[in-house]
Length: 154
Image 1 (cartoon, rainbow, N blue to C red):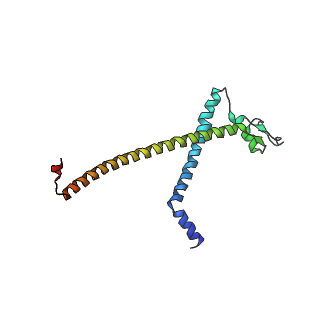
Image 2 (tube, rainbow, N blue to C red):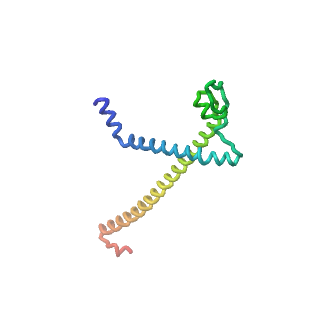
Image 3 (cartoon, one colour):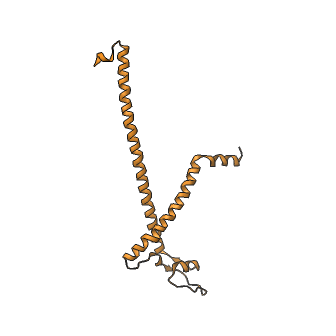
């Protein structure tokens, strides 16, 4: 089998396709979570704390280039200009983004586990009912083999 055929077989497996779908959905979900953090949560936190904007907190580690014409307090512009920055405010935003994403994944897994347990409980109840019916049918069968009718045993 050639390398290309092995690769084609590997990619055609369901798990690889499921993983690819998961990665694509995960990337889209991360974008939504980032927007939730940047556009909804962080502005509210900033408003609650009197204009506190995490992204504007940084320490400049190097000089600003002479050709730079923007504000010396604009993190994004300084970063784009190649100024070395210690962006701890941006890091706080990313950590909050991660915590939100982790919490949502936790809730999703909790929901799935609960749904699976409900399904298993239903199947266990069905299995118990079927086992009782099977036991009753075996008793009837055994009594019929012994020459008794089920009505004689009641």
